[in-house]
Amino acid sequence: MEACPYTKSVDVRASGLESRGVMPGPVGYRFSGTSDACQVMAVFWNCICELMAEPEENLSSIMLSLPGIVGSEGVDGGHVRFAAVVELVGEVFVPLPKAMVPLVLERVHLLDMPAYGHLPPMSWLHPMLKMAGHEAESQQLSEEQLLLANYQRRARTRQSIFCECPPSQSRRQEPRVLWTWIWGNGGTEKASGIPLYSRNTLRMVQMGKEKLQAELDREIAAQQ
View (cartoon, rainbow, N blue to C red):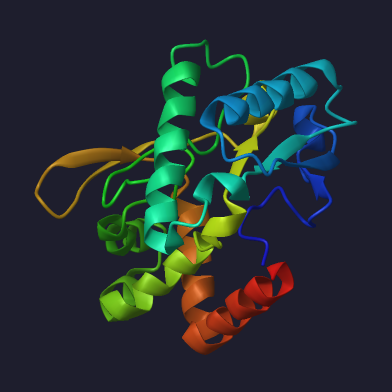
């Protein structure tokens, strides 16, 4: 659905960044069925090494699928275990210089908190729409309608994925304009990507729950 402006297909990433010196390249899909957290760390670092060694035009990013860490604990229990492994990866990875390789997914249990690589908190959507010039939609859309933006995050727990991309891509993507504004509890926050997140939120609302759920069901069926 082109929620990411730089990804036009499942095979090629970094489209539209040629003027910034980034050439489109293949997406590398890597898989490990291990259920062992230590082995997951080894697979993860192998992907980092591969990404650092390959030119961007040969490998633009890696999607690492780790369904084995979910185990047989069910959706809720599996998600808790996946979150624990993500935290382990983050604890090892975060202290390293960000100039190495940015990790898109570092935390899972965010609730209503902002975090790099994640969609903005739901409480931010009304102000974001207003700041992006969609004042009428900001006033008219209900909380239930805005919740459809969450379909951007949905994926089967058994196909849990990390995403890694080269640092040069992260640095040379569209400049992140920071805005300061007042939100729900009266505090101020800096937010980036307001036009993009607003566009995607409106797109999800326009598509509607029935179509979004049908697309999700189609993905789930394809993975079974």
